[in-house]
Image (cartoon, rainbow, N blue to C red):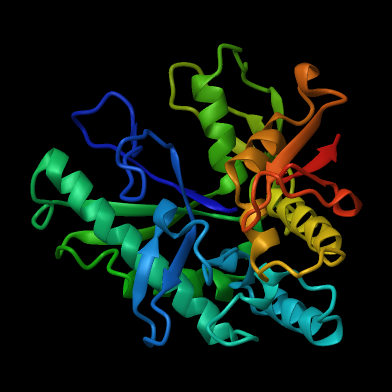
Length: 321
């Protein structure tokens, strides 16, 4: 999955506060929220749920941030057209229609950002009081894959349509640092390591949908605010942990193709979103998880269901490292 993180600050706070309270999991503290939503079936563009509440729900729209770039959206649609048999159910169900248009993708983005804005408005004003008369600056960091000015303009226009910048006459929207640049600033300010002036820093920001690289130099002068200078063109690639999710879903679909009678079409998708798979994906590479075998429950079957050809033992599909 891809996620969204939000923090806010004002002159009375020593450091920014990360928003950890989200409608879908009100009893938990989560630094990020899934960038997903689901619409009511048969109702034109009415959002049924978003954030954690939209996970594991058939018809969920996700990963749409990667397709906001028209070129990447065109590539996805061409892949679906040429190789429909290789597309996962997640890709086939990317829109309310089998092949979502770029306008559909923009609508997902706008509707998601509207849900996000409504929550932020309630949450922050509940903490700090009405912001209608206050000066509020909404700063958005952009993936490096959005280097084309037209894409950035599209994103900011959708954000404004969603409500950002419209809550008061002194509210504004700003395109801030790129995501790896923002990561570099955070690292230098919060790290226990001292980065002296002249130090060159390579930042790799590997996320859910993109991997961004930046090389910067600390050019801060004595007794002055932190200052970084970019030494290279910031590069971004549409490679992220969602590629692992897609590969897992495709593997499960291949295995389930041998099972008779056939299980529901969204079985692999549900397993890809399971907490068990997400846990093992995040733990991969740790010493205690090396040479690990793990299993993920198969929905729609009972605990005594076995199908060795598909790796299913007692209702769970088994995997090795």
